[in-house]
Amino acid sequence: MPVDVLLFGLRVISGLLLLAVLAALMLILWRDFRSATSAARVSRRAYGQLIKLTLMGEMMAETGETFALTPMTTLGRAPTNQIVLNDTFASSEHAVVLLRHGQWWLEDRNSRNGTLLNGERITLPVIITEGDIIGIGSVGFRLLLSPA
Amino acid sequence: MALPVIVTPDEPAAGRRQERGLLLLAGAFLLVNFAALALLRPEQTAPWLHLLVWILCAGGGSLALERFLPERDPLLFPLVMFLSGWGLVLIDRLAPGFADRQTLWLALGTAALVVTAAVPHILRLLRTYRYTLLVVGLVLLISTILLGRNPSGFGPELWLGIGDVFFQPSEALKIILVAFLASYLSEQYPALRPDDVHRALFSERHLWLSPRILGPILLMWGVCVVVLVWQRDLGTAVLFFAVFLLLLYIASGQTLILVSGGVLIVAAAAVAYRLFDVVQLRIDIWLNPWLDPDGRAFQIVQSLMAFGSGGIFGQGVGQGAPDFIPVVHSDFALAALAEEWGLLGVVVVIVCVATLVMRGLRIAVSTQERPYYALLAAGLSLLIGIQSLLIMGGVLKLVPLTGVTLPFMSYGGSSLLMSCVLVGLLLRLSAGVRA
Image (tube, rainbow over all chains, first blue to last red; front, side, top):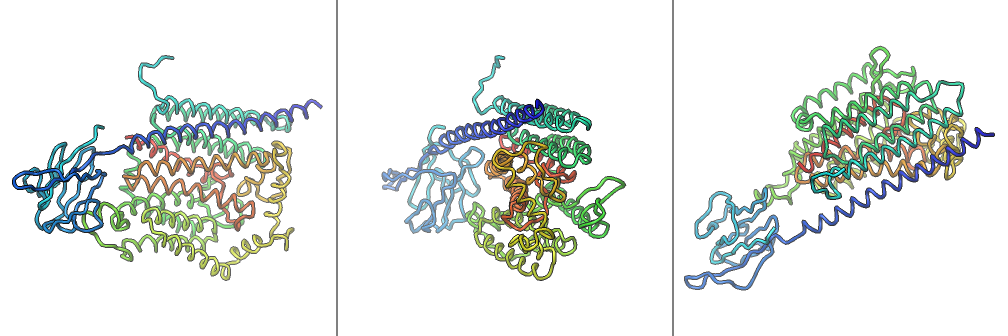
């Protein structure tokens, strides 16, 4: 019965092709997973640091404390902030440092005593760069960015 | 072929190779099965025309997408073509009279997929005209209730017909509702997500139970009730409600929504069991089909038989006997597939659908910073996923049977066309990821 044999052969090939589809899908997904994990590893790099400064007479001096920068770093007296300030001049939700469109921004959150950027009080969100000094009450932070 | 650009494994070139490879495998699979069909039915005209149309659709669609959308997800299109081509084989084998029609719908569907993916501002258009679309969708729903017919002359009247062409509006309504909810919920994001940037910046208070949130909940609930009460369309009602619940959960991140939604579904099922004979029948034959295996539970019992006789590798195309299942070519396509391609075939179908859904959700994750895109991608892929789960579970008697089609594979023009539009939107979203 050649038709039977032929049909059986076609069944076997059809089954093998189904297995091949499964294998191809698994291979593509596995490769995709690999490249996604390596991409995630790259993007989890450190953004930079905020170096805490304090007023010593006329000078700002480093206290030795540093804080890791995140895409949204909140500063204030409330314990929910990422950087908690123990300063009587700081408001509970004082300021925020944000990463937006590839730039770092400093924004005042309607604090009572205001936020200073390099000694000047800000009213609107401003772009900040390496070396800028953020002033809140008697405390300061110098921005130190990691190379991209 | 030496390209002057630096090619990393993740660049479009690799994606193109993967897409072509999968399409070739799918084409070979269809060729083998159509050949077996032609051998088994020498007296009938060979099904080669259907295969030819499929090849033209796959090749033309791939080239057109390459031209209009070079940076797209490489898996979506070949998976869709594979499943719909396999569906074509199934229909040709189970209901040869319908195969020409389904082939025509496949050509239309592929065209719709390419057009949807190629229109540059389709996502923005969907968002801008969402209220218009919603009104159109609701008008379609109401006109189906008033003017609906059934092409076969009996059964639920869910179709709108012009002359000889029938269309099932609930298929279009699915996409319209998901697009509407995605744009609406993304606008309400600040209120829904109190722990987000907005709350941190503006100290916005929680706006639960405001009309802005309750409005769409009541709308969706109303649509589901209308579909269930006036149309007796259990599957669509359950699908709408489940997708909506999950979208709301994704938008808000509140577990409470899932819990209360689950409670609501169980409560609704209990009430519907008392009130509607269709729900009562479905649940009764789900709990025990053997009380009436030759009568009301005949379909599901025959479906289980088909699964059993398929074994691991199946009987081979055209060599099983799935014809015992009434209307096997629409809702019970998976049972026929299980009989002729066996466990292997079912596993491949499940993996393909799961991959489609997974890629869709991946698109949603990678567009997270734009809530509208993310919610749209998640909603569309959940639509495919939940619909497949409902009908796959239904024919296997894992969940009560709800009459929805198996996406891409069941016979049904409107279902195929709208699933293609849906994948076109997903393709467009996947290209927007890098833009």
